[in-house]
Amino acid sequence: MLKPKKKRKTCRVLEIRRLTESTAVLRFERQGLQFEPGQYIRVGIEGDSEIRDYSVYSGADADYLEVLVRRVEDGLVSKQLCDLEPGDEVTVGGPYGHFKLTPEDRQHPLLFVATGTGISPYHSFVDSHPGLEYRLIHGTAKLDEAYESERYADRYFHCVSREDGGDYKGRVTEYLSTLEISRDTHAYLCGNCDMIYEAFDLLQEKGLPTANIHTEVYF
Image (cartoon, helix red, strand yellow):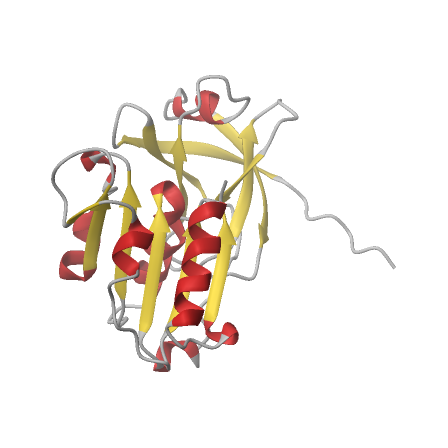
């Protein structure tokens, strides 16, 4: 039997936080939507059939929903989302996905690895689980793409590939290859597929069981 489709909600935009020229956090009404940190929702402009998947950026206990959107000039959704203003409406469907922290996982060392806006689910993890023990390695092309990194304090490590600055000059996988990682670590990988494939192999070579490596491909 086919499962019924989840009904999409119409939600009013509450706030836009513009982090860079091409990236913004979009906050909108929650409308009772329940999710587990790490899951994604489908967001589109009200009245438009085009939708895109975005990991929830906000914490599970917030009374609103947030997503981190990178503007793509020839895109059918991201550009329009970034141009919204408070009071505009979006349609939201979901939640979906299995990129989640289980209570058992939280008993082990946690390593979060992201590229670009792939940092989104980790923001939700951290906001949803106060006192969470983890380290976060974030790879971006530019220095100003450390999206609200102050939220993670000294647990955040920034790899910048195309500019000077940050904590490491180079790609996130280059830095990851230099680390010693305990076998009981649970690693979460979110971002572009090339990073995920390379990081997955690196972590296996360092002794992590496949069951301890969790992935979410963004692009």
